[in-house]
Length: 454
Image 1 (cartoon, rainbow, N blue to C red):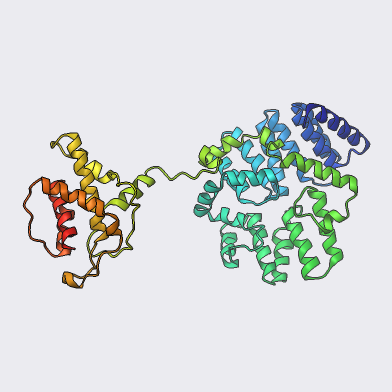
Image 2 (cartoon, rainbow, N blue to C red):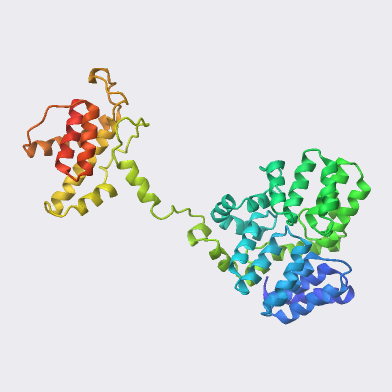
């Protein structure tokens, strides 16, 4: 939105507010436009005026007040107002995002981290929030594995929840004051056909959260769909639109009763919130909150990097010869380029106090690595049996014929006398023990003998 368009839109909403000061949606739009115009004082004033003129609780007006205090660098007052917003909608992702930002300003980092994780766990059709969840998908998945409460939050609006009634009931018993868990439990009861139990929960335990949008939505759908009481269901739908006209659940029957002007306001204010450079992305410390949950730049850009040391450990485990008697699926390496020395071999070579020059050591490490690959492909069966009963090696051996020829030529040049071949399982055990003792030449000899006997 250009500065010229911003000024024109602001003049329009100011005129609309003067004509109808009790329209909370117009007040919210005017507050957002003041924020985009870098007029935080006017934004706070507009939000406070809206709270006095709106006839009932309005979630977006309450959020605008909390945002106004936050921008005026009054985190204490902003914290009180954000708690009011959470009391209206405990399952609102934007409520938790604003609340997390205010807690961060108050230097209550642990609480800010949990509030931000709740924001990311709760689903929404808001484009900005969806992008935020995708940027932090690795961090939120890890957090949900550790905290079942966050996993339950992510199930609230799923079409097919992956949590059972028993699981959620246990969480409700452990967290009796959490309204989000109660709403999830009521939703699962309704899906399971337990209408009476669901209504008892929605109209009993959640009665103190009478403006909770998720509660109003569940009551609407229960009376309208399950009980066929369309008149009472429509009352809850209208109440849902009063509390939160921008609620993404208030579609169909809810929006059908709005006039064209109200729908234009809804679409415009949603566009301010949904864009990647939305009103919340501009004024809230999103990057600082992401750092609290361990999001890196690679995660934010969609690049999944392995944890430190994991890649090195995987390479070492793959290239180290296995102990005899352990049956594994044979792995075929790419034949185009000879393998490099593994970290295990390199560390053993570096720890040796005295020995040949560095080129000779590098050559020996390469030969030993090749012999390890050969021995891995020729690993025996668990029970020691005569060699005549052992099946012939797999085709991976043929892929390494070049490596075998090179290793055999170097071994012949050393003019070491060959020793009688032992049974395969003995040679493998012996070769591994020589390798563990850093006796590289003898280990190489043992591996080569193993390849010749096969």
